[in-house]
Image (cartoon, rainbow, N blue to C red; front, side, top):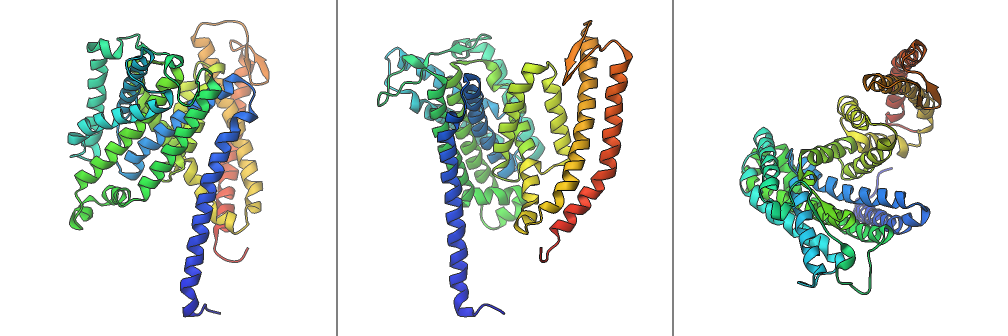
Length: 428
């Protein structure tokens, strides 16, 4: 039975109201989680990792303003992160000497303004081009700043960088930031504000036109919008939020070096965005959390953690190009249709076999690293103590790789078929 025409506007208004309530509820829930998260952990290491995650989330979201929303692949986005951090650190040192009055909570804003200033400078000419040319210009800017860090050593501190001390800054409302837990709440505040502001920017006409320029710049020009100006505004906004992240980095770590604005930092934010998914706003958030967690945890267990991050990036690009967020959104219709139960069996079986293959690959790589380093004796891998210079561990891990790969080859198509069946429109 169809809905009467007179009642359709009320139905549409009700749907829109429900969507707004759901959106506001998500933001409120996020704020509550940020407030309560430190209460669930007891160790200082966990707080330090969460601080690092908060900074990485802002940095990754600012990069997604370029790549995901504007289609601008930058190889030098860390320039604005690093410059914002250096400016914030110098201002913090001035505040510590009493030259100016600026409390610690406002320093990220100083970093953001610094990132904005340099983004306006470099974006004035780099955003006149798009595609590969823009990427090469961003790479050139990154190399230019890397060379400048050794020339202007008064500002960048040379190879040692510059240090600062947040405890010497003037207080705001009696708030001190001498411990990591106190710094966490500062980072959480700016994380919430910056994320909300970047989301709001994506909903503005400029943010919408950035999507249009990304998809079809000629049509955007035809309807009266300058693609250069749209890219320039997006570029400046991304530089501002990257500078905020850099300012938080200066407050949290109290040291900055040229590496913070080098190619490694730019490559790291690129990995975060792609792993999480550049097609969704929440994608860089997931990518930053996963990347930071793996970086913090894997580095304690293996010296090959960068190799594993590279393998994860390649696997994401090859097999899950939409990223983790895109993979989750792909299952939204299945969740709404309440058919998730149909996928549990195939997914668990395929995941278990994939885990078996991953254990075998990691074991082989770790033994190669052990032997190549010239070590002797035994090495603990997972739940075993193995001797990499004997034959049996190699055969055992190779067997795991073969068994897991063959199993995934057999169960993978069945999992795909189960997903297609669960996604089919119709009654559950």
